[in-house]
Length: 384
Image (cartoon, rainbow, N blue to C red; front, side, top):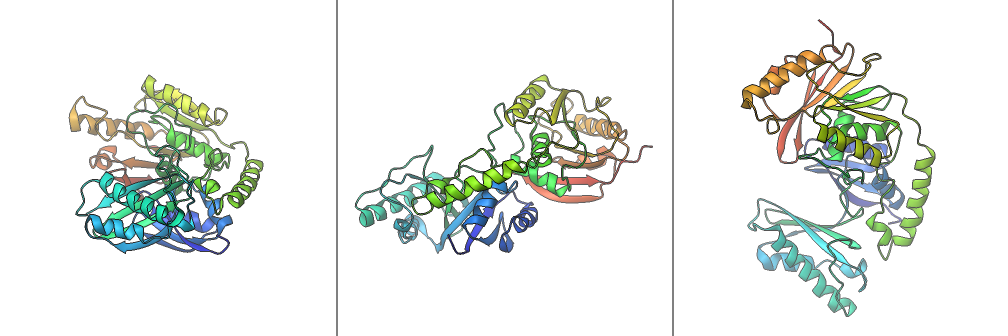
């Protein structure tokens, strides 16, 4: 990868423009938004810098080809036409991850199996033996996406998805993905230079991602990337990424402003505290058990950013939708005490905006997994 090659970074729906901005800042060229991701060009140095520093991308993929594929035989023939021997050796391990959209096939496992068989058969014919499948720690992750009859095949430079930062040691139900949390913070224009509060923090993801931004820590600083083990690129990639990690550590700083995470549930606040410790941010992020509908136990001056992902309805069972509207109204009334604070709230309940009883200054459609949401932003709060 001495020359610049076309790459593709995947992201949550609704965050493609945010990822495009980030990739441009990280040195990518020919940046172009696409459905569910961003296409760009990069050489090895730039690609590794992106793997280390992207906060928003889920994967960084090296596309190998796009094919018209019909039926099981079409899957096999398409995968068998790729020159896998240019990347693999007979000692390489691999796995196939397949996703489907509007296809004749109903099971991603079947699609992955046909592609796996084609790869193994071609490599046995070309190299004399077939590599082993390893679903836990493969050298190569082959990413297949089938949309209608269009099959795309790629290699993942990073290995495990990039949202797996390594700090989520104590998860709770329906946690916000780390990459989506980082995208929300970018959309809210958070740079780490102001106080931050998440008054319904759950397992602490938004507060932790804010902490990483505030201390200028690369989100991939502690992980190994799959490309470091690739036969053709591994030695060079390993050397370059170590230099990038060294520079990243040298440029970290202390957070200039406090970061708070509140949650009324003891289980959630305990989980968040453990995750903050695992992220090595105990000096930067303070977790407090507190109710967002009551007096907020933090300094409110100087003002900063309130960012949160309130319950959509499944975690507040009593009272149904009427109970949710009452809850949203209560937090809206309580947040009015935060004079001068900006707000960014990810809403997954269409009743939120009217019940919250403040008019947003901006809206953005985002997808939290399969859930269609709106990110509502509010200018500085003016106390009544």
